[in-house]
Length: 344
Image (cartoon, rainbow, N blue to C red):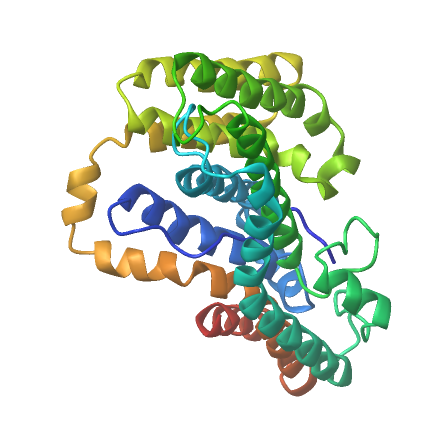
């Protein structure tokens, strides 16, 4: 049930309206991507709206790039806010990664419990290949350690793959920052231009390896390095907003993306590049922040993490109920999909 198309983390601050708007819109696109991809209801409606369903089932999944870029943008703030300012020491790396794991676990475990319960109910109501089987002990342990895709065990929900990747990306960026911190002058938290240049070089070399090698092989999608190119573009956008070298970071973002796209065109990488440039420059930021709908958009963004973790169990139960008790026609299928969307 693993799918490479889901999930953000908790919302950005209100001072970042572009992040709020992006998460609010993209989260709904990915929810609908799953609604049209799983369960018996969607196929009954697909013949009436083939173009829309085709787009939601394929192109809408690209919205995950927004979350990958945003994840890098936000992670840079706490781990590595400027090229020469790593905030993780080598000895602190395990604790920082463990802290991140503990932060993710409460909602993650609740979502897994809902997924297991929802699947159990759905199995009683309908027979569908999209409904997960009862979990085994090995599945439970793999999910607890966020190793389910690496261990090649079936995922219990559509959103868990992203949480595992998010943790890997965080750990990788923290490791790079920790290695760079070895070059910090004693007693100082920030290095000079040489250390900053080393930091940019180290990050960009790994990002180029990601977009030019690892991201070309779908079997590597279980590892964070597969997504590290998009993640790095977000880090560079965050660095560019800190100083006066915005055009230099624009060139770096374009350079990494262009190198990867010249080797093999990927819509996902092109979109990640555009999102990173948008976060770097943030045009009309003040207008967005002052708009009347900004509080609503910010609330939707804040709920995006919970929406992604909960919508699949809700979809299982609604699909099961409609399959069991209502006529199998397009009208009821549409009602079921809309009800799932609202409840999610």
